Image (cartoon, rainbow, N blue to C red; front, side, top):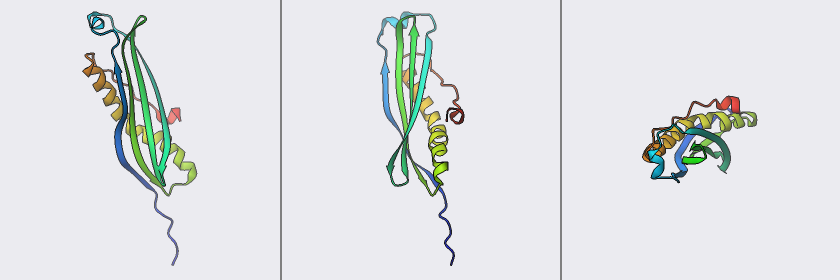
Length: 136
């Protein structure tokens, strides 16, 4: 009886907001401003083993809106996911952690950021699509 190679496993175990911070340091006066703020977005991701075959992937966006030197709002959100990844060749695990998992988390992160900005009383900030393959 020949031994069949184990089938690759990829599963989403859990999606969650790990961290969410919202600051509107110049409220309420900032709401009287009529100019459109400059929005700057920074993004990063990380992958950490949790257990045998389980990885925590974190995708963080920092969105800063400024009018001149005044901060209109600052949102920092980290969307997390626990993924089960097994029976993949070692050279295929890194692209899954750096491309596939962030692609799954990104729409959730976009929603968290947009929702936080709207709840702060501003028009939604819609994060542009990100090509994680190019970043990787």
